[in-house]
Image (cartoon, rainbow, N blue to C red; front, side, top):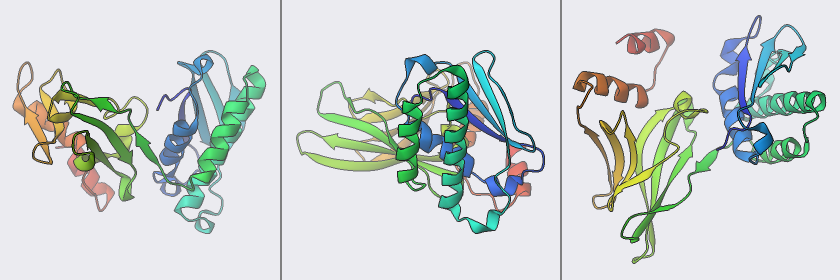
Length: 252
């Protein structure tokens, strides 16, 4: 995903945060995946503020728009309806800014149509990469599960056997994969290891194609093991029953 422009939705004022859930983030991901890269929008940012007022501020690289909350009758929409409602908000916001800035509206119109056709579903694939011996190629499949969980799956194709294998590398949190997040640039660590390096190679998380399993390796250099394990904990999904559990986890 190119995230051009980089889109963020904020809820403000009287907007009910519980209605937003992760629907607004899902809508941004779906729309960004369907928006073709446009050099003219590189490094531009669009902030959409949902609250009590309506205005725009398009000075500089950050284009901001304020809209009155759409959460007037939240019980009338199911989850997919809420996601599509936010896609409409994104489309309206970008079209409004495009009109003011003289941008070409066509890419936004196309992305809107494609996003609504997805009906709330999101799947993203990284480009295929081939290992050094050219015996296997791999890519990452990233999709949205329930409760903000995002499984990161390695799809490995063995060229000699002509078969496809899925290996779950890690379950992570939805905010981890938003623009600027992790898990978007996998690489072959050697002929049988496909995945990710973090913290200057002090943390490796990859799919081992010889065993068909996920492997995590910690190798301390300038960070302590506790620091690396703390960072790994932030990447690894777990479900929280309530806000208190989340706060306890965040404060550990």
